[in-house]
Image (tube, rainbow, N blue to C red; front, side):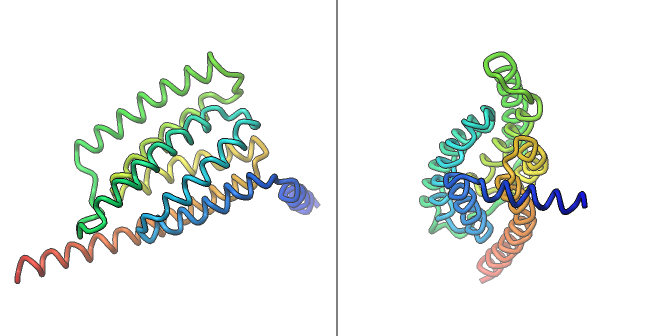
Length: 210
């Protein structure tokens, strides 16, 4: 009986989902699908999804998520330009260097401090710590994605793992479902990029041998 009630409540929430939320989810699915396949067009769908998400998150008072999406927007524009400039370069996917991990650590630490204290003192957020953790790890993941570093999937999935219950807590069931989908797809993205990286290494090795 309890399970039936949960399913009923979930279906009711789905029915009550607004058009902007449906659009944000649809664009988000398309973005991660093309990102998994290493296609630069993922950023175009991402930008559309981000704009829809900002609209939805404003009414949910998830200000950290809004700031995160603003960062997503900037990084999506940067990523699109970076991927376009390097589309003729065979070596498009790489592993993070020591300097990359230093940048990732700084993004996480500084991002968390800024988000947490900003949300705590400048907004009416009821979950500043949770929201800040989701945001700062996603910031770092998006930076790695823009740089086409394979480890972006790891950082983004850490953020997704924390974001799923956060969005459920805010009754954004469709967003929570999308994030669960992104969480699963990130595993496929990581192993697909790993396969591409391996094929690039073999190609490079054979080219040098010749």
